[in-house]
Image (cartoon, rainbow, N blue to C red; front, side, top):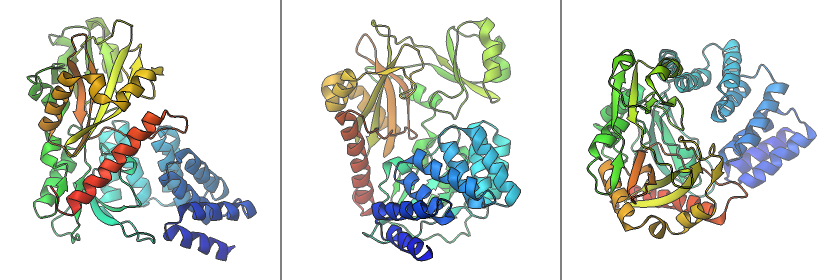
Length: 443
C-alpha cells in the first residue's frame, strides 16, 4: 500500500491530477481509512473545484483519525468555505486541543472570527497564526513550467478569490500576508505581484502593509493598493455621482450611537462595513424599527445608504454583474428576485432567457448609454481586476450597487447554460492573458 501511495503522490506532483485521483480512490477501495489517501484526495478534489467531495474526504479522515491535526484543520477550512462557521469552529477547537500552537488552526480562526465580526478575536488569532509565518510558498510540481506570482493577502479576509480566477496549472502563487510584513524579511523577486487585498473597508491594516512592502519593490503590480483604498462604498458613491447616465445612492458612515437621533429618510439601508453577499445588510422601514435592526448589525460605525427603489414593472429586482479584467468589461451574471436584496445564488429565480442574452451580447442588452457609464466606472476605479454590480432603471440609467475588487466569479454547475460556461471560461482566459502580459512587461 505504501508503494501505491507513493506512486499516487508522484502522479500528483507531475501534474497528472486525474490519474492521481484515480490512484487515491483505488487505495481507499482497499483501505477506506488510509489517512494519506483521504487527505491528498480531499485536497486534490477541493482545488479541482469539487469542494463538497473534498469536504467529504476530509470528514472521513477525521472520523477515522480523530487525533490527526491536519485532518481537523482541513475539515474546518472546508466547512468554513461552505458557510458553516459553527461546525468549522468545532473542528478548529478540536485541533487546538491536539496542539494549542497549531498555525493552521489559528490562521483559520482569524478568518472565522472576522466573518463573524469578532475583530479582536480575529486579530488575536491572526497574530499567532501569521506573525511568524506571513509567507506561504507553493511547492514545486511536475508538468509544464508555471509563472511565479506573489499574492498579497489579508489575514482577515476581504481578498480576491484568486482560486477561482487564477489557473493553477499555469501560475504558481506564493502568498505574503501583508499585515505582518517587516522590512527585514528576505522575499524573492517575482515576475509579477498581484495585490489581492480587495476590501477597502475591512482591510486597511493589510493595505497599509502592502504599501510598505511595495515601496521596496520594482516588479509590476496588479491592483495597486492606492486604487483599492479609494474603492470604499462611501468614496465610490461620492466620486461616481457625477458620471453621466449613472445613479449612486447617497452613502455616509455614521457612529452607531448617533443613528437614533440622526436625520434619516426612511426606508433606509444600514450595513456593517467590510461585508459582502448580503451579510449584515438590512432595510429599515421606519424609525421605530431601528433598535431591532441595530441589534443585528455588528460594529461601532455603520453605513447609512439611501434606498433606491429599482423594482421593475414586472415586480422583480434585478442585479447585473460585470467583471473588469485589464481594460475590458466582461458580463458574468444576471439575477432577479422579488426581494430588494438580490444575491445570485439566493435569488429565487435567475433570468434564464434574459441572462443568456446578456451573457451572449452585453452590448446589445445594455445599450451604448449604459456601457459608456460602466466604462467611466471602470476608469474611475483604476483596478486591473474587479467588478461592478448594478441594475438599469426605467430611464435606461445605470444604478450602481457597488464596484470593487472583491467580486466573486461563480463557477457554473454541470447543468448551467452554455452562455454561463462560456462567460466563466472567457474571464478565466482573460485573467491568464493579463497575468502573462504583465509578468512579461507588457502594459
